[in-house]
Length: 365
Image 1 (cartoon, rainbow, N blue to C red):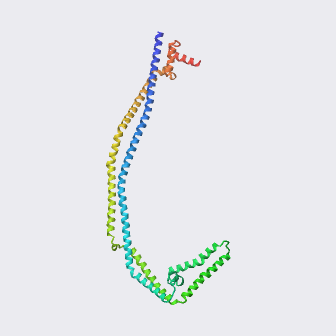
Image 2 (image 1 turned 180 degrees about the vertical axis):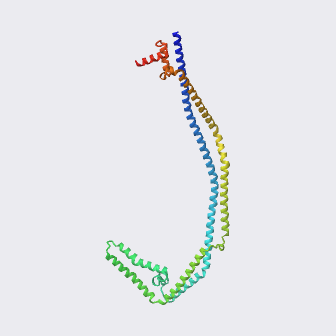
Image 3 (image 1 turned 90 degrees about the vertical axis):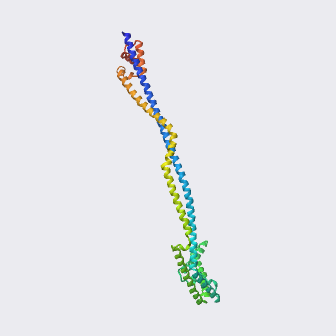
């Protein structure tokens, strides 16, 4: 009877240990499956990302290749258009120059005649040639704004810039030096002015006044020439310049650029609607077997994890219901159950409860 009881106790413990070992196997399998899930999941994610990047990169390069071909043709056409516009502008400017020259020919001819009359008059009266210059009349017979400006600038140079510049060159400057320099400037330039006045203006006043009137006539003609020039430059009517051939060339090139732009847009639209899909499908078909394999493996692992977790739950419930009440939480371990079995086999205990007490007692010693 005692032998039978011992056998039953040991059989119970063997069943408990076996159940716990089986639970351990299932637990290890669940851990490995979760490791495999992470590993396969990351590999699948990398493969999908690589595939997406490959598709995007290939599509972008093909799109850029299409656009660059049309852009190159458009650049050539735009360069031709630029040159055509430059040629047209040159032709227009040349036409304007010829028109200005034609419309001002009489005034320029008249100016040359008047200038020749002045030279002849000065030669007859034995007046120095420098008296027939703009600078002379600006200093001695100023009348127009430009001559007044020349007069003012000359005075500033002679009586301000030159004296002050000379003063700055003096090693040890003193106020008396500046006063002396200004005195010399007045003496030199003032004396020169008086000298020229006496030799020319005082002797040939009437002739110089007559030349003044003739120069005023030239000035008036030059003003008319400037007005005519500005009027021609502002004239929007370009028919007289014979620019039709340039306009035709420019129009053709502009139309060519528009056609290229339209063709480019059509090619890009076709690429987006058709070619892009074909490229994506070709790349996808090459990578699909590997991704499908990884996806299937990932699904299998996920399914196995669910099944393993269900099996673990079932075994935990069975172990808790059958063995936890007898063994307690502390001895729900295969090795500890083996210790209890050894205690019962050695005769130190006749049942599980006594074996647990004996094991505790042995540990406390």
